[in-house]
Amino acid sequence: MKITALVENTSVPGLPVEHGLSLYIETTRHTILFDSGQGTLFAENAERLGKDLAKVDLMVLSHGHYDHGGGLKTFLELNDHAPIYMSRYAFESHWNGTEKYIGLDTTLEPNDRFVFTDGTLVLDDELTLFGPTGRERVADLDTGGLLVKEAGQFLPEDFRHEHYLLITEGEKRVLISGCSHQGIRNIVEWFRPDVLIGGFHYMKQPLDDALVAKAKALDACDTTYYTCHCTGADQFAFIRPHMSRAHYLSCGETIEI
Image 1 (cartoon, rainbow, N blue to C red):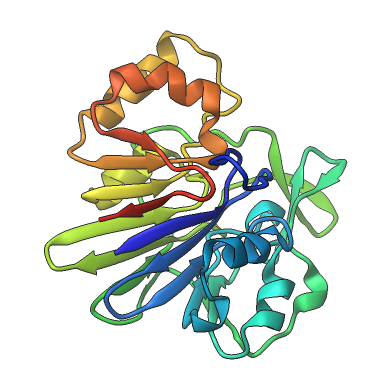
Image 2 (image 1 turned 60 degrees about the vertical axis):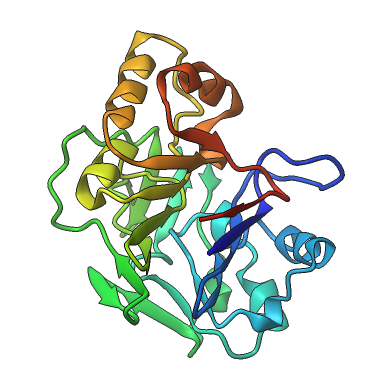
């Protein structure tokens, strides 16, 4: 399979960037858009990179934050057939503190192309979507000050709106995670993939012994990592010496697995 980053915080020379994530995934049987960044940039970069969004046969939205689902409207306009899979909680009211709304554009609801998931959904023998509900954590959940607004009240996030795409090709199990808000350590323990692609959400964490310990715990798992976006460039540089199978995926780059 081939995974190309259309949007990411960093870039190969010549491509514009934004804080967000969008991946163009080509498997044996599918062409998948995983997340859509903040707006139109994913589509602009797709054109620059020769990736045809009209060929996408399904989209997966990892969770209900603007930097992953802000391009939904653009994708709906450019692709007239692909179903869009998201958690049934994706359109909840998500906030960073009490002043900044970071959720999706609610005017897009309803739409008959949205497929709302909860728990596990097997799409075919290649693709499965997994939610986090009911899974036991080995590491504590860090909300990072993110909130959900329910009935006029702000409550700490539980990130139930997050889900993950597992791609199975032959003996290879590749897990795609957007921001890993449930905790990257938890996600690796839950699925034990051969390869994990996605953010670690370390970008606000201090460069200290605690972060080293987290990196070593990830390295102890027999998983190859291609991380990006919310991991943080400084944090990745700091943990890289402690991880034997960690790589960074920047906007414009393609990896083959």
